[in-house]
Image (cartoon, rainbow, N blue to C red; front, side, top):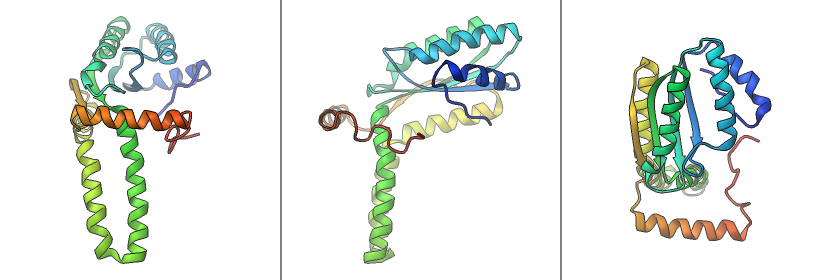
Length: 205
């Protein structure tokens, strides 16, 4: 398995060359204005020409996430990828559209926070006292992310088998009225810090 990241046009040639030896491509991207982010759209245009010229046929999957809580908001992006596959003579194999993507990222950060607190509590209070608290916190994190885990696992199995998985939508497992309240609080906080808090945490620099 080869993992590549498209940042700008300078990455295109390297990534396209690696596609020559591939039989499957899994795209991972955020929803942007109900569609594909502009830098990915530029890459896909070049990828289309490259693959047609080199007679490359691929199985294509996608995982996309959006800030909207409803996973079905990713449907237009899925349709773009399906049309892209038709133009390139690829096999469109489906994907997973995830809603509440920002909160999923925050939950990922909270997992490491909880893990750190678990180590601290183990040192100060002992394992027997720290373990139940950590287990409870971990269950909450996993529950909220359960839909994404399940459908991504299902898609991973399809990728390994080279079969289609269809298009599935899921979301952060939190009632909408609570999600809206949490999102409002979150964006007020990051606006106070001018986007500096949370953004970029745990990401590769």
